[in-house]
Every structure is written in C-alpha cells, then in structure tokens.
Length: 188
Image (cartoon, rainbow, N blue to C red; front, side):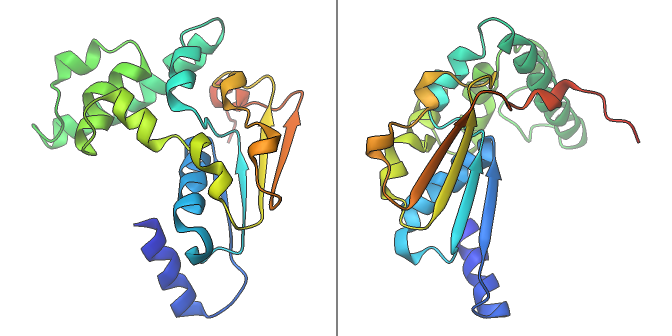
C-alpha cells in the first residue's frame, strides 16, 4: 500500500522533493520499503528514528529489566484497541476476549494476532520477514538513521554494522534519547 500511495503523491503533486520520517516500528517499515523499492522508491530522502531493525531480538529484549515497563504499557494499548475491535465486531480477530486478556508479552500478541491477520505463520515468521536489518544495505536513497544507546526497546542487535551500510546511509548513535516519552503523562 505505501509504495502505491507514494507514487500517487508524485503523480498528483508533481516532482516536488519528498522525504519521509519513520519512528520506532514505522522506522523499521520505512527501512524495508526503501530497501525493497530501491531506485523505484518515489522518496528523495528518509530519516529513521529509534527503529527496532531486528524484531525478534527486540521482542526478547523487552522481557528484561526496565524494558518490561514499556512492554506492559505498549501491550496494554494494543490490547485496548483489540478489545474495542472485538466488542464492535465480534469474530474480527483470531482471538477472543479471554485470550486477549491473558496475553503478557507483545510477542504473544504478535503470535496470536499480528502474524495471523497479515498472513504469517507465527510471530517468528513475521519478525524474520519484516525486520529491516538484513535489507539496510539495499537502501539507495539518502537516509539518516538515529538510535539511542538507552532505548528500552533495543539492544546491540538493532545497531547496524557501519561497514554493511551503503555510503548514502548515515548512522548516528546517541548516548540518550530513547522513547521514554511513551509513559509520560502529557498535559493539555
């Protein structure tokens, strides 16, 4: 869907320079898109921030230490959305409310819901097919990747080896800056 929409934008609005910013899982998806589309990608540049490029490793990292707090927060958001969907459209997901309430890890959610509704065998199949890390060397557009060492969703597995990145991809690793804002209360 994304490539089609981007091509439509180019047709509709002409050759204006176009860039995209992908954050977190959206950054991983943007990395996959850039790699798959190569020179055909209608984007002129991209910025990827805090992307979990190795989904399987990141799913296990979220079971450790303080990362569990973030996992619980995100999982509760996912479960709340899925619960609303099940109540409004019974049978629309491959689980029932009891199964949904019993989930304790994002990996379980991905195994029982995400993978199934998107045609993957299980979470592992989804993680392996949708991780951007093995594809980053195929990116042909100017791209900036920014990660933080203190990101609670990632460990060293999500840091791409500099020697495997093409010259058009710049990588910045900061000491701080992970998405801690997720659990902060926002005032209106």
